[in-house]
Image (cartoon, rainbow, N blue to C red; front, side, top):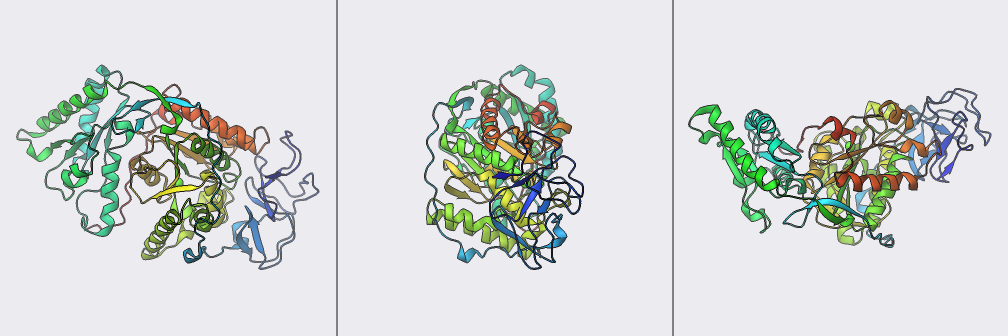
Length: 520
Ligand code: CA
């Protein structure tokens, strides 16, 4: 990364250019820069440029490629003078790279040196996974039971949870699925396996407790067939509301009493020292701006490499934000089979979007664009930085459980809550979330470490943001510094010795299933 001149003087006009081939760079001064601003290399702004937006480093002819991250993010719709604001209205986005031409394992990175000696205090499970929290989950087969389970959970938290000091929380896995859906359609496999694998998240200690209505399409044995469970796991406990003969009070009593049996078992769990290799870290971004791709996401990428070097699993996701980098990722796949699995997930999603009359360009939000991101290509190139630099070791479909160590792609939509829910189903026990525009996002099941791309957000939201990666833009820290900070913070939070702001305030977004199948 080369940088606009003048470190440490916050008022000096500064830009960040990521790659030597780039003909645009990002203005990083808080509040942007006015016309006439002069950078130390002599570049003068011919118009004002907002913070995190692009400035032309050279004169660009109509039709000329606009290059950022060393890749073409679009073509100039008109002549653009050096020093101009290169906003989204001036770019025509390029087509997505064809999947048929993606190289298979042609540039597999060498393994990085192993990182030894890092550990955290976690809850070991019988199936070999490790939890970072100790939670009683109450799974539900259908939305019909959600309000009753919510009523019971409030009672459990008030009346009995205080007696079980080693249990952190009681969480109802409520959702909108389970009935009124084409349960045999191919797309139904996704929400069903998501619910199954969600209930097996490592933070639930292998204790599965399901509440069913009775007449719904998604029967408990279909949601979690015993054949799908590990031999070490017990058959799920089930409470069926339509079995109650004496009304609502009996239903709630039954849920509370079965919950107490589970609480007794969970209360025996203790934290033990576990190697960092037991972490399953999900990385995600939401509310990105153009600086996310040069500060927060590369810092997370550096941390990703550290976790991989320590033997852990790191999953990245968000199909529409990696689609434009597909050819770069398939080249990094450890084997041609892994590359083909990645292409399979991209192709499935291309078809899914096409069937809905959309394409990947539907991804960027008004906030992304206001934050300086011209289109999905620019967003994608910044987003994949979270995946670090190591070989891709495995690919999981939406809602599937991840089993490989190293860097893994878990296919999910980019929607924050759907991605988070699917990563929980994949077995995530820690979550890293980067944001530029800002979102108070959090999950009940695993701690969410939020990383801000810019210091103005980190300053304004001092009680929501856990790590300020904006210090990279002001040259007060390097990508490596912030990467190590994230790595160490994750180990502390996973051990329960530090709390994220989202957990401090109890900010927990809902579970949102991905249902590509028809509703009836
Ligand atoms: Ca997202």
